[in-house]
Image (cartoon, each protein chain N blue to C red):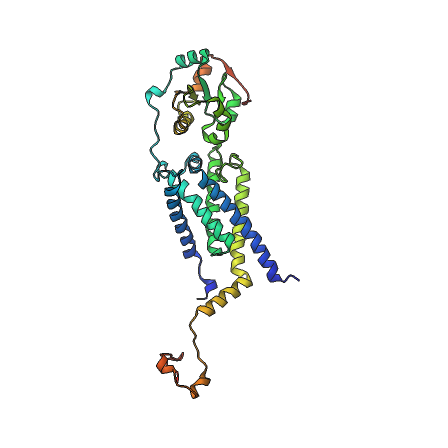
Length: 187
Length: 158
């Protein structure tokens, strides 16, 4: 029988696959054809001309790294935060292009679709932003993650107390350099 | 402070920095890598522009291909007769249809509309990067052509 923990893990897995997968695909397609993406960036007429190539080189890799981490579930909140920030930026850029009446290719998923920017792109961005925010929130609230983090924290923390029972049989604390929480040496 | 409350910002910054590093390395290693600083845009030289009379002669001889750099909607509303539409702003989407008709040496006349329109300049730059160098620009092409009463057509590209 599925427990609520299983269900939460399952939903998180689907969210990670959707959000991370979208960014991995988007990044990989742009990396495959950087000149095309540079042209798309240039069409938005927002970045200074000299920096267009730099944007076209770096942005897809940030998408790819963040998407991969989300898919792998590593640094999940941070990666979801990066993805959410990118999505907000893309939303603003597309909105600005639409407001200026530019009829250009989105450049969002490489050459796939090749569609001109429009409300559909804004809707996709909004959905991705919502999913990324949800993922960040769930990764914070999910009890399974909390337990795992606390377990890790306990395992990595130095022991604070030693059993006092052994004091009568063996006096090792002072020699081992161990001190009680109050500052006195054991034994 | 517990681990779960630790702000993800430093990790997010790490992800961005790692992405930047990977991007720079990937660009260096890739055969399709780009120069980090975009080379200055090459403004077409004076000799790249073609006067209307000369363009008209070439059009009548049928030895050049006219390419309309405007958007498909503008092209459909009216264009130079026999011209093909290759929008500068969605070049990749449309070039596949045009490419089979061209060789690197094909003589081309590029135009858009209005003295402020830079779409034909942008198209010339993209074509130059693709290895097509035998082109001329008809400045203020559509308006000048139409006002001269030269042959025009309407409708989208077939």
